[in-house]
Length: 428
Image (cartoon, rainbow, N blue to C red):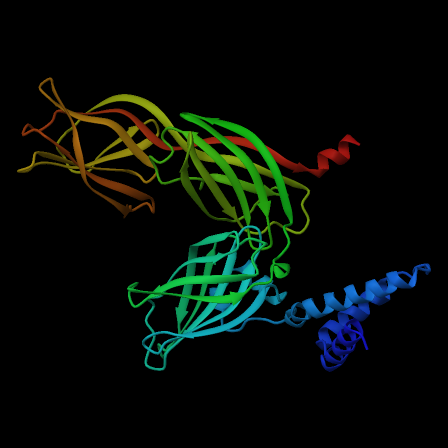
């Protein structure tokens, strides 16, 4: 018996002892029943032998994938979004089942990993019968062509305080990685460890939509260039380049950008940005797209804008003096003389930042020295206000408060069409 015959006999015996899940058998049976009969073609024997070897190798390599299909994670229900819960029902991802014991006896379990082109999601459990402390820090996943840093996470502790269930998201991992190493810290970040586990890129979820955009939208102080959209089962990511002078003057980021599928908004889940040449690279994250898409479009509903004001407001000295500037409310809370100088407490809507602020007394102008404090407060009307304490280097109480301009969340209403099947049908 040659080596090939020995290998085939050994693999045949191993496969006889393996039993596929009943659910898989049923799905395969239904699929075969729905497949139309095909005409038989005669092929040379050497092709049949080669095909048998390839099929045997495929079954041997992917049997774990078949076995995991339909397996659901337990204990993560309250942590999962609706999309993650649906993917869990579908049995997506791969099992890890790795365990490590930390220096204090705490047990860290890596339960499963869900990956696609947009992100990687790790499911983990922390146990200690003496009590667990939420002090583990996950830094990144490392592997071939992979440095996937942690992005966001959530966790919950049981009533006894002995177990934590957690979900930690990372950047996407490379399809060339065959194993991954998790770098993490614990004991208030003083101890650093790592754990390596096998990774099967064949179990990564498939990308549902990937499209280049390359279209610009002009805003008050620059441009937004939308580069691409990538939709996967776990989320939808829009990549863009922002070259806007006042982009970071208010805390809006990409939060005013909408994605409409079939005319309905896809839920915005977050955004991120990083410095780049000639601006900033931003990513805007949305939930999973619907299964059927007739229309898909990006709407720049709101983005940072700028308005020149050159306003001079006479101050009365009374508390809570309310003024309207370019449709935005300004409240002068308090003006007082202190040892450091004149302090003026103002409140504006959360998405407003004033620029070029100064005070005048008998014709003498004093520019803003510094902002001592900034707080977010809830108003009586349910609006959120940003309250700031401004310091001016003078001992003279002001007659007027001058403002050169303001940065604010401006409505633009610009549309970029990505998919319009209805228009295509009408055109035909």
